[in-house]
Each structure stands twice: as structure tokens, then as C-alpha cells.
Image 1 (cartoon, rainbow, N blue to C red):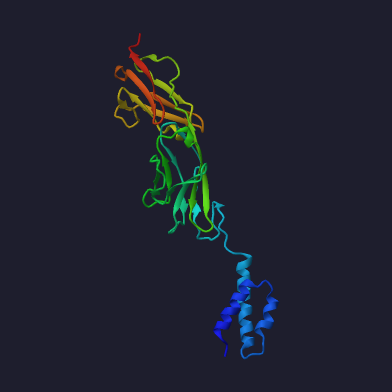
Image 2: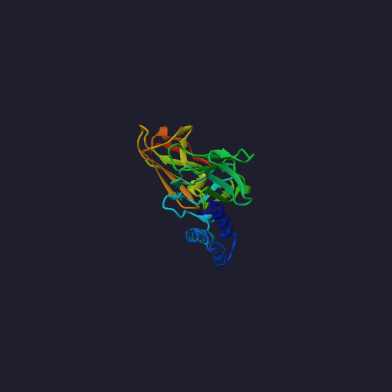
Length: 274
């Protein structure tokens, strides 16, 4: 009859002994059941060798785990610009998250800012925003400063961990500019055509709106004949306003106001035909 204490002892020896051949004389001593025990230890040794040669790694990988069911990052904008003093929103979409947590880490000092929905910094400008029923985990930074410029990692607590770097660029305060004179005269029935330029990408300055006095202008108004065009590049935004069949009522102060930039205004006078 084989002693199980003996088996446990030999298992310990397998884990500590570098030479497998040195164990054979110890096991095969002519006692009953020794051949069965030897076969058992061969199986244990093979299994042990597999773990020794390729144990689990805990390195961080970028983008995708090893399993087809691992968490994976969705299409995400990884270069974000924000204007000094305004909010920055860093995106991160994680699919197949399961019960894992999403963390945001500042690469500059490896400071853990958020884990799941919780914030782990005394700087209350940092918050995580996770819209319900979505796979999005945003890092919101309010009132950004130039010191916030840098790389932030969206990290998932899988094994191995997966991370997505997102770069934040903080721009100085931006200004909208309406080219040309700030007093414009046009005839009744003509088209008011105004252009507004901002030397920053639209994602940094937010939407651009036009106002006549304190009233927002848009194409859905009963007056009709109002249209807008927007041209966007990563570093430049142009908004154009057109008001057709101008009447005296269309006279007034027109303001171009980006959400995250200073506004500019021009006064339009609609005058009768000569």
C-alpha cells in the first residue's frame, strides 16, 4: 500500500530538485507500489515543468489581451486638445470589460487618478464620467492648466494588464476673429455674409454659435434664409454665416461665440437701396 505522506514528500522534492534523474533511486526502492508512485511523479514533474518554463506574466501590454474574450479598446481618439481654463475630456472605450476595473493613470508621475467610478486624487478637477449602458470611460479635467499637458493611460485590470495612452495638449486662451471692419453696411435684399476664424481645432474650442443681439441664430427660425458652414482642420476652425434677403430688422450686433474661446462681434447696418 502506497503512503500518501510519502507522495507529498516526493512532490516537494520535485519542486526543489533540479535533476529529475536523482529522484528515481529515491522512489524505486523495491517497496510495494513503487512503480505506481514513480509513474505518478513523472506526471507531476511534467506538469511542474510546464509552469516553470512559461508561468503567467504580469507585464502591461498595449491594446489587446491574449484571450478572445479579453477586454479590448474600441476606436478612440488618442490626441486631445483643450483650451487653458476650460474642460478637457479624455476618451476611453473598453469592450468585454466584464467585472474588471478601468483606471486612469497620469504617466508623468504614475499617479492613479481614478479606479472604476472612484477618484483617487485630492485634486477635485479630476472626475471619471461613465455614461450608463455604454462602454465609455472618460477622464474629465476641469479648468485645465499647462501642467495638465501630457500622457494619460487608460488601464484595464486584466492579467496581463492592457493600457491605452491618450495625449492631452493644452492650448493658450483662444480668440475668435471676424475679419474686416467692425461696421458693415449692406443694402436691403442683399445677403449678409460673415466669417469667423479661430486658430484651434474644433474639438478644442467646442461648437461655434452666432448671435444677433442676445438671440441665437439658426436655420430653424421662422424667418428662414439663415445658413451656416463650418470648415474644420486639426489646427483651424472657420464658421460662416449667411442671412439672405436682408431687411432692416436684420440690422444689429452679430457675435461669433465658440464655447471655449473669446467671442468677436461686428455691427451690421441694413440700409435702403440708393
